[in-house]
Amino acid sequence: MSAEPPAAGTRRPPTGAAARTAVAVLLTLGALAYSTWALEVLLPTGLSPLRTYVSELAAEDQPYGTFFRALDFAAGVLVCAGAVVALVWLRPRARSRALSLLTVLGWAGIALFGAATAADSRLPLSCAPTADAACAARERAGLVPAAHAAHAVSSSVAVAGALVGMVLLTVVVRKSRAWPAARAGGVLLALVCVELAATVWTLAAVAAFDAGQGTWGLGVAQRAQLLTIAVWLAVAAVWVVRSPREAPG
Image (cartoon, rainbow, N blue to C red; front, side, top):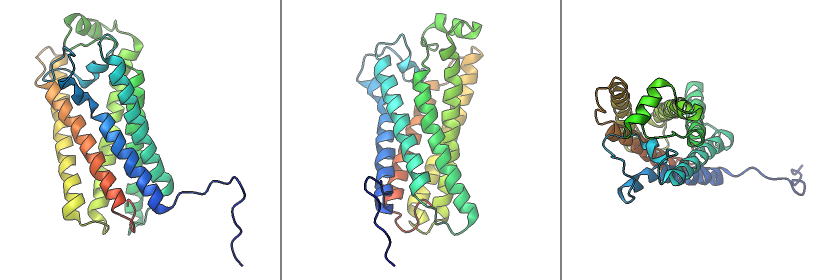
């Protein structure tokens, strides 16, 4: 017997190729939006890229705060949507249940990163603590708005989600036959190593700043951290498109 045609108005699920394309486009656009902090080199922000948080560009008292918050929100929504599409419509075809589980957890980590990034944009800093001594004093005394204080939590969740997703999906790619590990897997692994090093540097710099010992190149460390995440997302987007038989993973 032939299958009955779908009822009128019923939405068909996307094909594997369509889903892969959607994931790749969403991740790529999200990576681009997540990298727009680099426009600080063209805009008179008054903040030093060497010692300031990237989040300070989007602080409520900054001239381009609304612009950068909007882009952060767009980046988070795009990446989260891409990860959700991958979870729902890209069926894992890994060679073991362990790799299938890693795939699901990896995409869940990327989805968490996107959602936390979007939330991060809705919980902006009220001022720029690394550039404004009065702001730093209010922050240490707990006299900043609740959103300012919550920003550190949402930022930490975003980075944690990114690290989980990057590590787990890189493992899946390295074990996958869809694209030689020497290419996609090697690039993703190198980016994971850079991300881990940049994260350690960022945490050390934050601790030094909180202790009044300077910034230790905080701005450089965090920008390296964010740029690495964006590049990893772009490479992952290429992997998704180029893996038709063994969709991630």
